[in-house]
Length: 382
Length: 218
Image (cartoon, chains in turn red, green):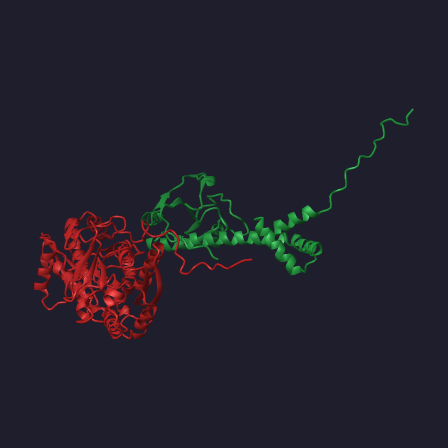
């Protein structure tokens, strides 16, 4: 007999980062629509916090109090941290489908997006070897950007690179000219971008325009690299500023694999109005697929049983093999670096040879001590 | 300069002293994620079976259950409360006597029982970095004490140098400082040596003629 489960789906499909969030909702719904597991029927209960941090907690509580035990949702780390206490209190499971900055491992969260050792660290190695050693960090003023910039800075300094400056703007702020001026004055070898949503799109446009006005070939002279830039966002940036940006990600819609061709075709036909597929849409698809498979294997939505079951799943996802590490409940994923083109897609520049074990606390790859942010204060003594 | 912050605890070893393994299940799981192995010393007659002499501050850390009655005889410095390895208190009963015991052991961070996984990284980060900071401050205090004790020798050496070289006190001090650096000694040690060398040689020991025992006796 088929088991019926109500599954929460919580994405801010309106608000400052709605473009990515809508692609994430689509990814999750696509996995539900595939109906590949006969013993399980899933009814998505969709809620939209509209990018309002204060709304997440109430919606999560309402979902969990209505009997929902599993929720696929959240894009920003601040929203995830906002809802985790409710999942721990109700002993429910959040399936978090986005790349993030690590340094978290809740027993009530399954993380299907990339950890920092799967996005920011491969990017540092790539840039230092091919582009240059000086970077300017610009980001949205919250934990994703702060912590990612710290990891980036420490990895750069450990390998002989340096960060010239860091600038942060509020989420949703599009007044970006001062940041652009500061970058042009500092003239870094490249810009490390952790802006999200509308702030990011405004920045890409303003930076390209300012460079053009000064006769600077921006993609070649001062390329912008990101760990969050995805195809729907390239479309938002728009013509004229869309090409020549690097993105470190575990998924690009241009991946030429049978599983990805099937995924992108199904996605396009199911959601012809868009937005395009993205790494976060794929992670949401993977999260919902793993959840449905785990529900089927466990035969119940009991959190402990589903957690046990998910560590036994093996998925041939659009990006390749994906499985969940039993120790950290994070996903094995395949790091890649792409270069955006004028068609709002990414051309693949680098690809790891296979899935990389998640290391959310960077215990295998970070320096033992925090790197000092300035040179030691040496003085001449007589 | 304050000691650098330790942020990656990979390779560490936690000695968890408790009689209540259920309350620290999440602690062991989270330590594993952080690359820290966990051992549970056996409790014999209320004392944890740990070779305290073999503990290394760079690797080992102690989690001590405050509900146990003095389970570890740690050689903690009474004034600075600086233990030989980082100590993190496991708090069950929130009574002053229990907390005081953990403080006296030198605990620099605390975790409530039952331990929540989300609190472990913070406790480790705080506990170990506070331990490093206290050690650094204690070393500075020791150094200040040493310098304070050597102050008299420095003053005497300045005066001696002034009369010897006919210089003023600034020149004498600069000369002593330079010479101490050249001889790779602290200023205080150098001044003591400087004074010892110049101290007037002791009088030659004189041997008083011993009276012959029984002399004068008839």
